[in-house]
Length: 221
Image (tube, rainbow, N blue to C red):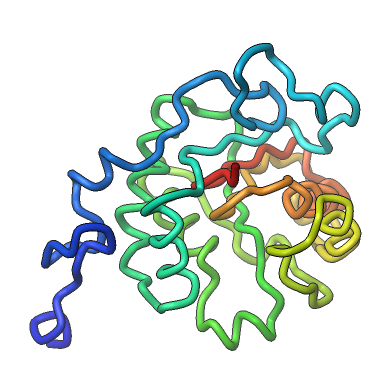
């Protein structure tokens, strides 16, 4: 009934009856060029970024589908902070399309968790919503409870790289043995420095995970 009275509108062009129309999806800032084979950051040339040449990544690799800019930035903001949960469906299709072209050797999806306080405030975890949308399209199970954020952290948004790593160090825990021998796909909405993903990977490996890959919808420049 509410959708009849207040139908969804494309968050980019305003077209009625869809959260993100196919024309606007086609115009999203897709990552199409060379990327670092480890962390997935876009590169002008070469196979490894300067950071990965100096410091080994603490997971098998990070892959991202889009650049976090332009209309995508607004769409993710709507999903996270404006209760536009319907955006998860078209964005899940974007993730699934990428996955079909670039599958990874994993057997379970684990979304990056929110702290319980933030989860209660927001009402849902945007990473988990995206994980379920991807999982049902590509036939992978989602284990939302495999990883817990055991302490609150300040927002990473305005922190420098070193501060981001300190902020999330030891913030995630996986129950002993829960991921024993599993090949995990860690899923989040945006990757900036990879600090949160690496901290999550540490927790998953402590819980027995054999390998941890990460996939994010967007990569911050």
